Image (cartoon, rainbow, N blue to C red; front, side, top):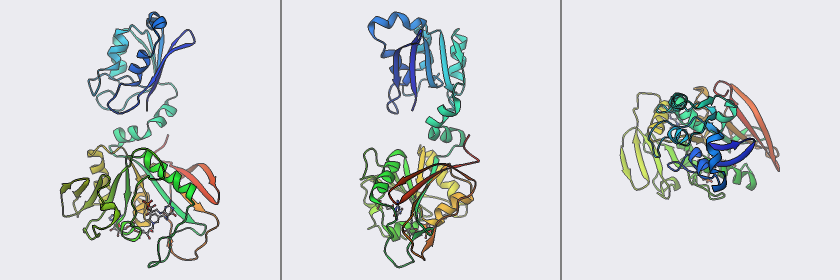
Length: 325
Ligand SMILES: NC(=O)c1ccc[n+]([C@@H]2O[C@H](COP(=O)([O-])OP(=O)(O)OC[C@H]3O[C@@H](n4cnc5c(N)ncnc54)[C@H](O)[C@@H]3O)[C@@H](O)[C@H]2O)c1
Ligand SMILES: Nc1nc(=O)c(N)c(NC[C@H](O)[C@H](O)[C@H](O)COP(=O)(O)O)[nH]1
């Protein structure tokens, strides 16, 4: 998400944002939005943009060239672009052409806007959000053998589906796939369906499970099979090396910029114990007490950023203290 405005003497004469990957960048949309009567002001205006203008030919031509061509004398940049083909080159190119560049401005806010993209390029892994729902006595599932415990209310479930629509992929552990038979869709919300990532190292999950219905792209991480069928991708990993770094490396290679980890407890705890997470979102049903069942993961190194209530559910948002500015 990148935004840009063009300002002439305290008046906004153009504005634009990057609508979709592969389409025109914010600066191009901003410059193109200037009305005919204001076009002569462009070369006397200041361009504000939340991310450094690009310097390379990617899906679109370089924005820094366009800015130079239009004779824009001053550019205010929120933060540098960590993407290796840009990373300071856009700023350099502008300065070399005589454009005054002010950078950075509101850097933490601009980085926050693109947290997934920044994590992907600086840490070479997707942005990781952990999520679980727990009872008031901190259980995430009923005792083994009992049917799936419905903890969150229908409004919170809608929010969870919204979260799904905001991330590139959802990851679950083998037991969750087997015991809950989730579909991992965002049918209660709009927008894109995330890629389903399922751990099944020994390929012991029955293919009748909903995650194998091929209705959306699904990747099965396992130790024996490398194969791509329609919407179903078996991705083979090394059984002697730790699993999580391999999954994150595979996701990076597949250009998956963010993952919502939906459990279960073992999987979530392994992300926590390895410090491999950026955000955690927990839902607590304040009125449901089971007295037994699977304990919720134990979070560490976290700071609470926000709390929200939806009826009897309390939703807490945490950041990883070690990763967030
Ligand atoms: N309330 C919630 O938010 C929520 C969310 C998801 C699941 N659940 C519940 O959790 C239960 C399942 O949780 P769980 O902890 O038993 O299992 P899990 O879903 O975490 O799966 C564990 C299995 O996945 C694989 N796995 C997971 N992490 C791994 C790692 N780091 N390295 C190698 N293999 C790994 C292993 O095969 C392991 O046995 C279910 O009953 C489900 O209903 C609740
Ligand atoms: N938000 C939430 N509230 C709950 O009460 C509960 N039990 C889960 N559990 C999460 C677990 O991952 C489930 O398996 C999927 O939430 C099922 O997702 P589907 O909508 O069936 O795809 N999650």
